[in-house]
Image 1 (cartoon, one colour):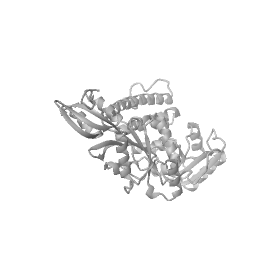
Image 2: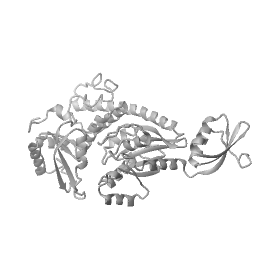
Image 3: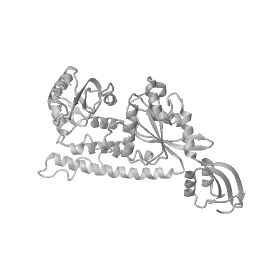
Image 4: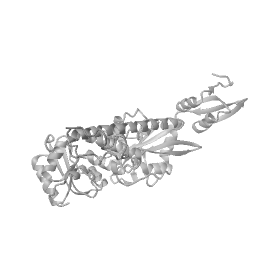
Length: 450
């Protein structure tokens, strides 16, 4: 695109940033620190979306400028920087209001995206399954709906990503009210599409809850963490799942669940989830709730941290904030310091060790410490065990198999049609056993019911 040539209507509607030349802009308030890593994450986000970053600039202010986020002088500087770098896109590391975007575009004569729009664009490009596409589309529409300013005359750009022609799709009967302004029509179309997507995702949520409930016989472990922390690589190391593992942000959007073998016939279920990020758009958190159902109902969370990152502490805080937003219950969580083989500053690792003394140190890429993770899962699954003597019907193969998997069996005795099992097992496992086999009885040393 030629320098100083303003984008047309369709250009603003198209939020994709693939192969565009971008100038990055950050606005820091007085209480925010300026560091060498300022705009580093936005740079990675832009590159993940396919943009070429040609310049960066930061302004410190006491408050955001209501009209354009930055001051008038800085806005003119941004325009000049974009001219000099032949950039056709400006990306802010802040969320902007529609009026701010309009003002910045008018002065710079270039398309402007804010942080949330950029993240939504990346998620849209990564969505592979029908579920992920529905979730991304819902997040896009919920972000866009309050910001409609008559920028387009219809919504083919977004609506239909989850399946063109479905209920609530663009056009059709009822979309042409006499005397209505286009923005009112757009809002009605968006509202219908949002309602349709929420219904579809509610179905997925109910199905996912049933799937999780059906796995109650298993100890469920969920990998959570900042994007690009190495969760998928750890998943592959523990299960051989062959999950997509790339050195880029948001390589994984869809939850993958696989068995992790723990030895002696024991196994747990391990789930890899979408990576988190600071200031993750609220609508994305809400729409991906179904995908994160595994984390919500897990028995153990493994919080994978990129120990080689200078921003590890901030990333840990960001993940904890998202888990809080998801209303994840008080599930036991263990920090896994990954990529220890890539640590260049031992001081940073020492600080992490001090702040998280019970953390495991691993390199999922080389295999270092992976067995420790496996052993931890096994220990947590088996829990603090107590001695029990159980009477189980011989025909109840499901209960007997459960005991073999989740208890340490010391002795078996056979009494007519029942098996007397002397074992050590955790209270949690014992509770699950009673759920799947109501006829299991506790007996004393003489074989009498307690």
